[in-house]
Amino acid sequence: MNNPTMFFILSLLQLQLHAAFARPSILQEQNLGYHNAFLQGSFVGFQSFLALMGYYEPEEVKAGMQSGELVIDEVDDEDQTQVKVVGLGLGRTGTTSLAMALEILGYVVVHDDEETELTDLFSAVEEEEIDTDKYHEILGLRGYNASFKTEYEWVQSNEEVKGILTVRDTPEKYVQSWSVAAPFVQILEKIPYRWMPTVGALYESFVNEYKEETTGGSPDDYLNPEVLRRTYLEYIETVQTAIPSERLLTFNVKQGWAPLCDFLEIHKNNCPTVPFPHVHTRAKLEGEMFFLRMITFIWPLAIILPLYGLMKLGKHVMKRVLDEKSKFE
Image (cartoon, rainbow, N blue to C red):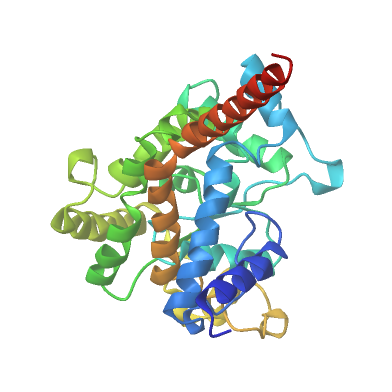
């Protein structure tokens, strides 16, 4: 384990035992140590790359994208539901940890991992083929009852829906963490990502999430710390004003299970006893971003190496032909 190469290989093998592009399997990733978390993040970056290429899109979604027709693709009747809980926190406020917590509680969640599996649905929203109500209806028909891809206005206008607003300890901690994630949308604007159909279909929703929502509609300032800080505070106030307190939980994941279970009306005897998830740490995010950036530099090798191989093969074949010809002269 002291050999860095062997450590990297073993880390990848361990990760590959888990479902591709699934939620983290370790609830307390802050205990991994920086280098281990960074390596795991690099593998997540590889999974993200595959997802952006459309690798995880179901065949029904791919067919619908190619035909331009949105297929509802309903699950079995007993699994059909309605969206009942919405995560309203900005990115890097503990939303992945909350998503895992909701799954432990039995919810079927739409978060970042599902975005590239529901490309057709997000594309239909962006193209205004369906409205927000229809979007949530289809999510329910596909079996999802919790969403992190929903605007607070929809929660405000649907009295049966509860919202959970995740927050950080301080605005400064949010800005520091988000500043690592924000360049993701910049990476997508580079080759080869901008050539990928899945990226093209989701690009507007990515821009809204990474540039519009976090800046209050000033996309050019999406890396400006002061704008990010101000928008974060304004967003919290806006959501808290828009949604009645009985339907909104302002939640720091450090608070653990008790306030979440209480808000979702889960009896304390049924509240999980496992540690509350603490995942997608900054070190892991840095590893993911490193891999995604690396692709923008090495992608020409995908063209150069096969061409070089063909050139070497052609040269070898030509030499054999000339050698055979010389035997008969």
